Image (cartoon, rainbow, N blue to C red; front, side, top):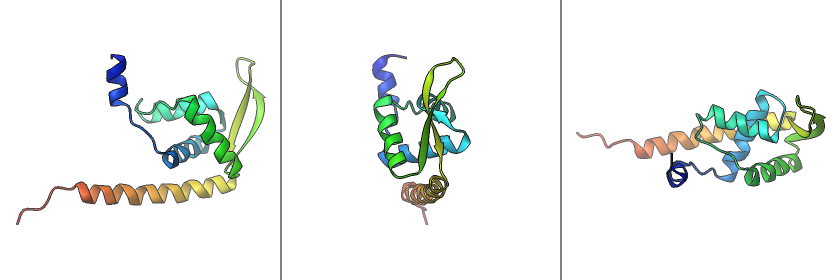
Length: 118
């Protein structure tokens, strides 16, 4: 796939959506930034490639909100990495975000439905 074709097919994420996906990835397991990006990429069927320039500001934002917490650990390859974990308030926020997202999807779906011919 050519570089321009790849960018043409890329789906851009709004900030709130990225935060929700990061919270979802962390609800599956505590992880470091690269691992979070890999979870999002694989679960989206390769549709979302979260760049570090978007991911780390999102993680810092979520940490300031107390929705995630972090600690330094060693990876399996013995490298030092910051691991992020969902907090109890982060789990509540994920539920809220998911409900709002479902409402948005239903509303957009209703607008996009073809008109019924009488």
